[in-house]
Image 1 (cartoon, rainbow, N blue to C red):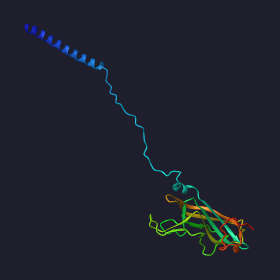
Image 2: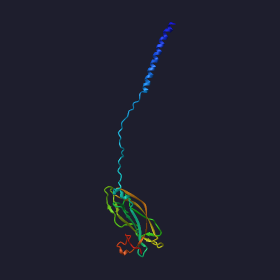
Image 3: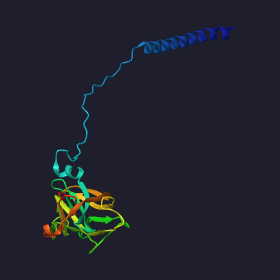
Image 4: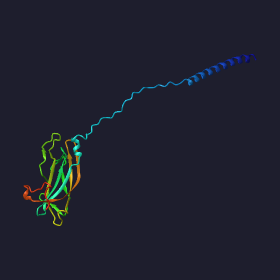
Length: 223
């Protein structure tokens, strides 16, 4: 009995210490939870967005804008007065500072190619090959490409002799022609692929009035 009386006060004292310790921990937890959180605010400086500058051709510059304009392509045929023979003519009207390569331009640059669609109503005669009304500008060795260049500028017409079949009238005949090549200036080239033009009768002419006998103007009067 005396031993039990000694343990009871000690146990009571230890229990009191444990309870006090637990209360102190709970008190600290409550104070932490109640304490407002501190928010860190970082200051950022506004920087305007920028885009990378890229060099594009400007519309105002003729060097790059001219080839994009539609060049004029036309065709026609004339007959010698009183005959069924004449000339088939293809005409290029090029923008300022633009050019096409000649019919005989050497590789690797694309020469201008004129293809007449075959028909039973007419035939090409002579050498059956187109010839220009003026010689191209020749650059024997281009300093940039190291090659020979043959260029036509401005207005150039290509002519080939022809003969019409008597089974059709001149006004009824239509001659279809396809063009391949490219229109260029000093910086840009516009490819031409199977561009179609249709030649129609543009009048008779008197070969005695022309040294070459080839009518290169459309001002001729019809018979």
